[in-house]
Amino acid sequence: MSETLAGKWVWVWNWRRCDGGNPQRVADRLKSAGCRGALVKAFDAGYWFDQGLSFRDICRRLKARRVAVGAWGYLYGDNRAGEAQRAIETAQHGEADLLVLDVESEFKGRPEAAEEIVLRIRETLGPDYPLYFSTFAIARYHQSFPFEQFRSHCTGTAPQVYWNAFRWPLGQALGWTYADYAAMHMPGEQVFPAGGLYQEGAVRYPTPDEVRAFVREAAEQGSPGVSF
Image: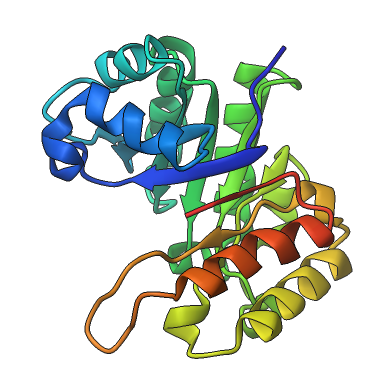
């Protein structure tokens, strides 16, 4: 059975900064928090992302400790064949349980780039491989982004609902996200929202109560999982 983004997941950008890259400590923290798995950055555009260890090694070490592992990479749409190939190789040879495409402002006004890349990936990996895209949460503010091209070829989406960065109430941020994605024919069961558990500049950490409310409200909207 294929893995999905159901449950709770944590995004990993820099493996070496996560408990010093110690797989046992990372696994213990994830499991103690009730997390199903980690989404580890594997590539950036057409290049492997340097994590100190290969993505395959990280994947094997976490899986040996019963932690599911998904791969994610940032795409720009400039080297369509190269970016698609790196994503494909990550899925085929990196031993990832699933793949998330981080696609943002670089794709605005470029539906042909989105279509070519995601179609190349889907046609190679097959119709059943769990493939997700992660991008803007409030779609009404990003109408030039090619949501339809990604929606039509992906299993689901992980919109970036960073309410702490938006400086919005949590309910408004989630409510508008689900309304906008429903309008694009993506019901709650295909939406796996990503929350921002970080502090940077004027952006504050969410409170524990907000985090619990995020998980609860996402479930009430029909989402099988969330990530942070």
